[in-house]
Amino acid sequence: MTAEINKGPLLGMRHVQTLLLFFNITCLYIGRLNVGVAVVAMTNAESTNPDFPEYDWTLTQKSYILSSFFWGYIITQFLGGYLCKRYGVKSVMLWGSFASGIFSALTPLFIGFGEWQAYCGIRVLMGFAQGLIFPCIHQHLARWSPPAERNRLGALSHTGIECGNVCAMFFSGMIAKSAIGWPGISYVSAGLALAWCAFWFVFAADNAEESRYITQEELHYIESSLKHNEDYHKTVIPVPWMAIWTSAPFFALMVARCCETWGLSTLQAQIPTYMNGVLDMDMKSNAFFSALPFLAMWIMSYVYLIIADVLLAGNRLSLTALRKIFNSLAFWIPCATLIGIGFLDQEQKNLAIALMTISVGVNSGATIGSSLNTIDLSPNHASILMGIVNTAANVVPIVTPLAVGLIVHEDKNREEWQIVFIIAAVIFFIGNCVFLYYGTAVSQPWDAEDYLTEKVPDLAIAPAIHEAGKGIDGPSQKSMILKFH
Image (tube, rainbow, N blue to C red; front, side):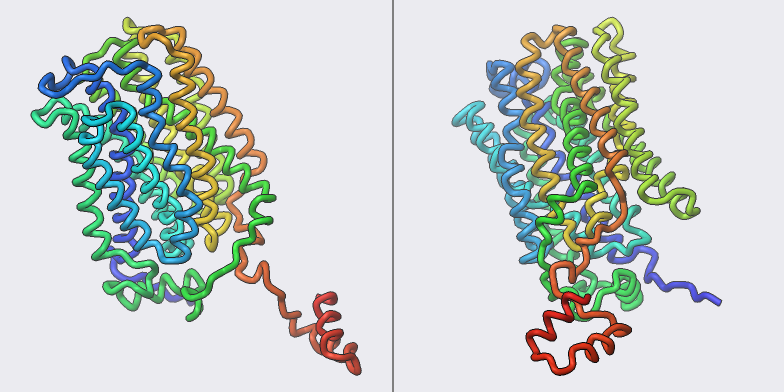
């Protein structure tokens, strides 16, 4: 006979933590990605609200603005991983999000004083603040998600990426055309971030044991499923740096994330410019159709999630197989659509929009495919792995706008955009090949808490060691025991 596991209330605190992470990611991505629409609005006032200043920035200067966020973002990834293990996820995420909101609110003021150079500067500071947060998110998921629910809760929280994309593209265009103009884009982003901080302060906890609102049933379910002992939350586990840096599955993950970021960041940052230039679409249409691919991405993320739950629940696929299949769909389908987009012009704008929507929508499978793989490889060091992966992956969005600036000299030149999309397609293809060959969802040996410590020999062989060691001094006996083990 088997007893049904009491998981606590239907909507437990682990679900509240997931919801908080979802809204955090949404707010972060709104602040991160609204720059694509904002730059178009600031350099083409006739398409938005002409009552606000217009700037005559070159394509190169706009490329610097689009990439500047990531100059600061990559600096604090390692720091975020360290701080959340040292001081707890709650504090680090709170202050990182608060600082990001303040910098967003100050953006119009900075632009008024220093134009594009000051815009780059405040975006660097915003990136610096946000860089602390994503390593914390993965550590928080590892602490709050029972293994049986980790894929579901992790994927649900990460759908905030797609929600943030949609809101940044769609609502930013509407705000730019409204009475508050392009400065309102920054003010609204700041307000959302600061409102989230208030909810996080009240409801968040570093782990289930520290939550004020959790029921005993849910606490027992989470703690027992994670096999925590009473000293677990107080234990600082040494980081096995050498094992991490020589791990083939970890490097496969890092390559996959870098390649996925190249393709997606090309679309995220360049869709408004491409639609305005090659497809000759006004700002109102631009905002809607720029958001459409990411709306498809948001919807598809739930489709992937449902399919993954069904396949895993029925033991039809291993988690490793599931991740590789989803990652292949997320990488290789966009390969074909991106190449197709490059051969279309404004006379075929409907087909271009359809292909772009398919490309971005299908790519949402990368969340389940590879993004959550850091928790698979090492729940104990998820924040450290995420810090390393995010540092490497977010060098890419610095490079992609600059690469587009070197390739595209005229917004309306279809042949130049063709090169941009073909490069992204090739990188997508190669990245998934590496992940298919070396990737895995199996927890690595170096995740063990005692990996870097001396291990006590098994009880079964202890008597034999003791008998063999009779008459030998203490230090020599200890050395023999370690060698025997």
